Image 1: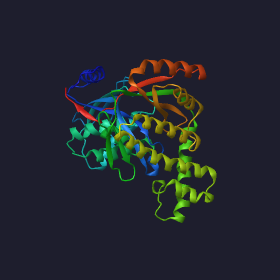
Image 2: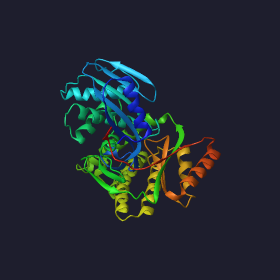
Image 3: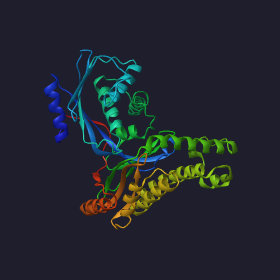
Image 4: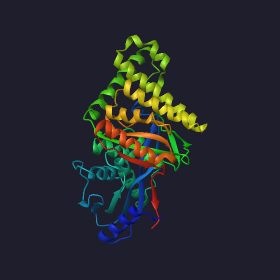
Amino acid sequence: MINDKLSESVFNRFSNLFNSSPLIVRAPGRVNLIGEHTDYNEGFVLPASIDKEIIFAIAINNDNVFRFHAFDFNETYTFKSINPEVKGWQVYLHGVLAQFEKERVKIPGIDCVFGGNIPVGSGLSSSAALECGFAYGLNILLETNFSPYKLITMAQKAEHEYAGVMCGIMDQFASISGKKDHVFRLDCRSHDFSYYPFAMDNYIIALVNSKVTHELASSEYNIRRKECEEGVAILNEKNSCIISLRDTNPDELLKYKSLFNQVTYNRCCYVVKENIRVLDACGALEKKDMQRFGSLMYDSHAGLKDEYEVSCPELDILVDITKQMSYVLGARMMGGGFGGCTINLIKSDHKDKFQHEITEQYTRCTGLIPNIYFVKLSDGARSLKT
């Protein structure tokens, strides 16, 4: 049901702009608890949908025209044909429409208002939420009956082909397939996934935005992918069954260490150990051992800092501060690296204390005031009754 301010605002804006009754859809952002930079190595990740979201009001207009209104920017955009050269938020909508056209779906025209509360640039995948929510709504309105997995892959292709970002499938998967109060382990090779209950009664997830974005992120991301591919090529010569870092283990890496330069070896070590950490984290959740889960988060950050080298001083400071807080179980950088957010698992009755202490200490160390978001784990994309 529409019972929150954001949904009501989007619905009311649609009513003011368009003369029809819309379908209301929500699509969430996501966090990734553990399993960073493993997705493009065909490994494991452990994401979840969160209660930060984009709300869509969508209707067919039968005018053969597409009319979109971005509530947060108060911008209206109208067009009649798909254009791969557009920029900004429009590119994601064009990309999704292009995927439906590739499936030979006739679209008679769409009116749409969307608005959200996912902090842009915070690493919570607002772009995936925009793609997935729009695709989810079109699937209902056009009665195309595409499966959730089909919508996930269509949204991913929209990002690849129109936004030009060769992302893995995790973000779109989380936006559509999330489950309230659960995380899910996603196999980035087979795309099989399993849900795990995440105890949210006594614990809460806090995201701390470092307020820095270093320019290294995109270039270093491509370098890391290349370094991992180089490592796989070395291993494949010794064992043809190894076609990704998913297929090896720490002992095998050590056996062939002399064939690697130190940097490539470190990159491969991190990925291999991070996959093991994801599996161990799932075991900890099955045993309801949140202390163990938090310890694995700290280990993940250490690997990202020292072996994969995608952290930065500000992220390290945020993580180090939490190690002095007895009520914090674990923390690590989240996302591509070189800035953005840390994700923190804390005891829920220390929420206010955490916000005060992390802000005070981080500001004293860096001169920056962090943004802090407390999130709950939510369902994936859904339609809401009006």
